[in-house]
Image 1 (cartoon, helix red, strand yellow):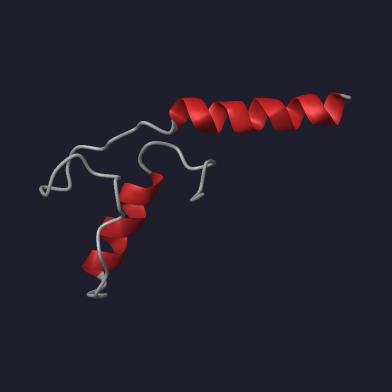
Image 2 (cartoon, one colour):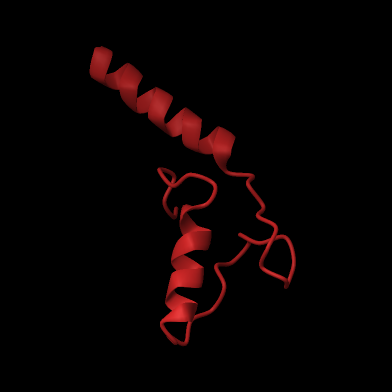
Length: 61
């Protein structure tokens, strides 16, 4: 499921931070739009919002 609480840039920052440390890591799957790792595929936003809305609704019930 990943991290629905992450904003658009969180995973990108972690990825580039770890690369700068010299860690041998792979780019996150389906996160970047191409191999340049500069454009983000931010397609999880609506799903993330629904998860939190549902959670808040359950707390109110």
